[in-house]
Image (cartoon, rainbow over all chains, first blue to last red; front, side, top):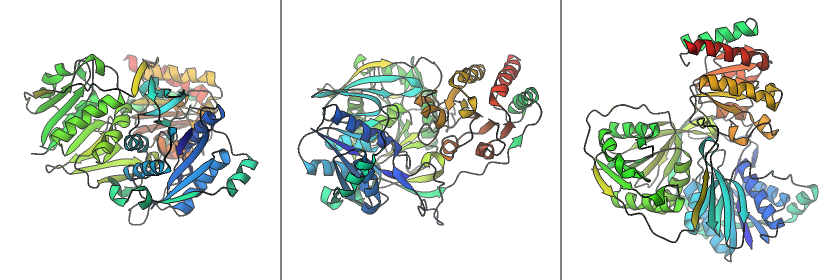
Length: 259
Length: 323
């Protein structure tokens, strides 16, 4: 049975964010795009499930400008995914429109699937919403922030993280949407033969319209972007370690008033 | 009259601080204030909610709601929102709400914004909220589109708790607990052993990086944290090296934090780490390298070996806090 993995392409974590002159958004000129780090765990888990004989095929999906996001799909193919689908869409879809598009594509593919994997959030808008919305549109259960996944034929047991190092063990009826957290696995690097093979694969192209989604599905937009305020210059503390520690403790109490 | 509905949470029969923050913001709007509480003992909250200026309380009480179940909670919340049609829904941006409300929003076809840090609600139910993007590398204002109900998940510790000017007697409406064939079953909840606040809620964070030299030295940071009532965090480098659990990672691929005091020990300050801690009010940086980027984001800086300075700091704070 099939496993779908939904991935997003995001600016690399080392990116220094610059804003457009009118503050309407981020200036992406010169940005290095990578697969969202949490999605790497999702891809890896799909591959592991297939290798363990729990699934027969791993199909990766992405929504966005097709020329750009196809690169992320190629990376997933190079890691070992079997097929890839791109849903060509403008840059600024929100989680709702994205989830609708992904659900539409999965339904259009037809046939049974075991589960849909996603990352727990994308490190650009940090919304952490697409997986739950996708599950709703597919009318299947979901689990987010997952660090352990075991699947049987009709059900999965997951461990998810909550606050303060607490964990929940949840049983889900399959199919389900599972959002991966760091700790689920160690994503593999693409091998050279994998990269060569991925280059030859055809990425299936769908349109937003074709999967029943549109810009009218957008519920959240952003405006008035701003960079964080510059901090005043740092106060450096001199002396030997004992003096430095003493002065710091005093400053935190009397000047910063945080202790 | 339109209303603001607050998704309230409680422990041991008391409203959580985050809920008090949200109720304060809801009252400030001048709109009718509604509260929803789910879980065993929720019914008993009605007096407390009235004192907090709540006009109408909706509660789903019962042993079946002891643990968070996404399916059950979605059903209950959607039921209330579709019948009461509040203009705004407020909830704390914690792991429960962040799991629940996107699903609720999808079912109702309305907008949800998580992790907001500023909030204003007008008397006509318009929402002005900002949230960090790229883990804090920038912020943006949320603009809700075609959303009958605007769902805002607020980060804890961002709104001020104010006392209600007048206590009210909240009306109580009990909600039926849905009985349905569940595809989601919560088997077990394993509580964290540290007993410390989560990094995302912590008021003080003591964080360690490569400069701590080896995993065993994190004990030093724990001792410092114990004295300050702080939570221990870490850089990606040491998490990836397997020194500490990934739950401790601060940064764009870890947790975005906003403590009052952030003490960075032996952390050079990779851009993705600086983004994750950019919400901190006061930052202390201790690093051997005077040119480390962390000093550009610090309030106070010490050039030196964290292994020497941290134990001294622990002693100093002990002295200070005893008086």
